[in-house]
Amino acid sequence: MADYDSSLPIRTEADGTDERVHTKIVDFSDPSGTDKQVEVSEKKLHNRQFNKDSDGNDQEVLLSQEGHTQSNGDYDAVNNKRPSSQGMIVSDRDASPSESTMNKRPTAVIGDSDKVALDVAISLSNGNNISEDSPLPVYVTESVGDEIIDFNEAVDIVKNSTSNHDYTVSALKELRFLNVEASASGKAKFELQVETAASSGVFNTIGVQFNSTSNPNVKFNVKRPATIATGVVVRLVKTNLDNQAQSIYSTINGVEI
Image 1 (cartoon, rainbow, N blue to C red):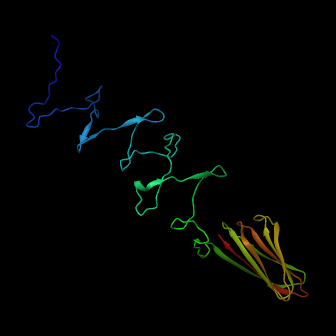
Image 2 (cartoon, rainbow, N blue to C red; image 1 turned 30 degrees about the vertical axis):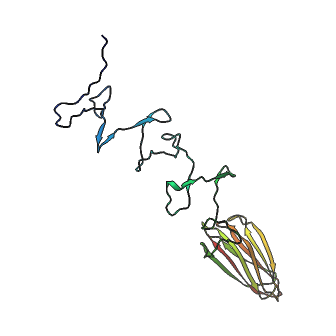
Image 3 (cartoon, rainbow, N blue to C red; image 1 turned 180 degrees about the vertical axis):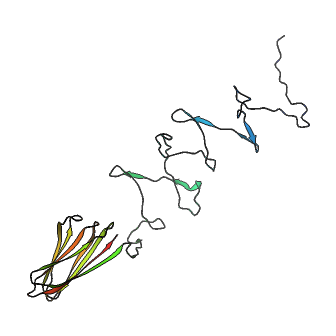
């Protein structure tokens, strides 16, 4: 007659009242070798997991401190030639942001100079648009730079002679040019110049004004302050147009940053 297929239980002997089967997970070719057996501690099975990297080499799979699989998005020519890449997800505005509030995808646009610009909106704290009905509050504070008030008195300038009031921008700083004020009791001409580059000795005229006996004061107002580089000279050429010698006064105002 044909063999009868049957199953019989197995169990260990002399194991007290808790009879059980002991099974080891070991390396097939070297079961008795060092570190060739799976270990169990704290009722957990511990093993080292390996997988192929993008070059086909075996690498150990690592976890973060929270138990998540680690991903590296930083390019490295040797260790990470194909970095992880994923889209940015942002949270709803929430007092307690969590995984359940992460459901917004930001957008971007291609800009100039080969850049991709992330879309960022300036809004009110409640998220509403800035408009005439909902304006953005603006508060004026002191300038972050050093205030420059450079005064010059040209004493007893003879008729038709000139005197230069020069201010050189401090080293490692830029001058945010604001205005120049000048005054003379008699008639005078004032020519505002800026050097083309530090130590060039060549000046460009950016404005000329004349005073009079009824209006002895003049003022150069620059509505949009210019940025003047370090080492460049700002010059006010003061010419006496009166019929006798006189002193001519001037002040160069600005902020160095």
